[in-house]
Length: 381
Image 1 (cartoon, helix red, strand yellow):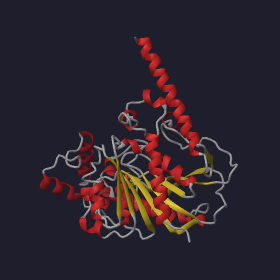
Image 2 (image 1 turned 30 degrees about the horizontal axis):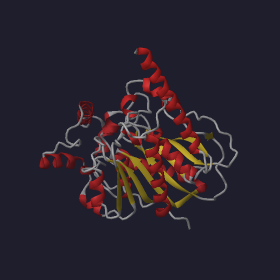
Image 3 (image 1 turned 45 degrees about the vertical axis):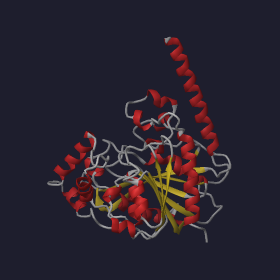
Image 4 (image 1 turned 180 degrees about the vertical axis):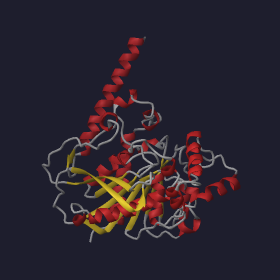
């Protein structure tokens, strides 16, 4: 019996490996090749959470390159072996940007809370193959990509994320390599989970922290927003403690209910957006740029009714697509390799999809939706 189980497991890994290889091959058909570069931008207007320097804006940039560019696996400098556990794509590390177009639209990408820019590399890569410059950053203190992992300060200050993206636009436009090739009139943003809320804030949504507690009390709800897991509640409690003594945290709280809309951003694409009940009705109703929202019906992390549907009902320009079946929150993350099945414990949730869910197929559907949305919302002159 044990031998049979091993044979079945080996067969599954082989089939999964073949599908991964097919997915890699599919990515390069009929599209331009993609380059990748890293930037270690900073925001001198805000301190890092340690209070010893400017706020870091570590950024991954995907962009079109000329046919024939040398492809090689990029060194993302991640603390874990990203390429071992997640599907990587054929990239031209550091190659010169394609001169086929003088100006390219820019898409910003915002990852989910505690995740990283590379969790949405599949979308960044797909958009770059279609002629976009794509910049995804690690939100300081709320990312696993930094030494020491996520911090309570980063997790509990979602308003800092939208500011991150506005500063990222400044840095990208000023970048000597990419700046001259960006069409400043065609800038969009996409995000997942907390990143979905972040891009909605770029469009004009205002997050009011106390509103979540007020909503939970008045609705007596069993919603995920009202009953946080113990690990998350521990972070919130630590943040409350720091808010009494930490100067950087106190300074951040003073910015907590400001408007962070950026008029340079012309359209946003939000995937499974989070903390919907924490955004004010008035601010959402005032959004006037195109907003596309995509969510999974089986998402129990950001429930559709109180997150995606609430945003869509209040934002006049919003469209909503709910993916049917058992598509969940983690399905929006990177494709996992067979090695992830026996990898560290933290991969078990990240790589898990319910039976019948083909993550690669879901990604293809979302890529097409995003591509069509940005093509219409950011038309070329």
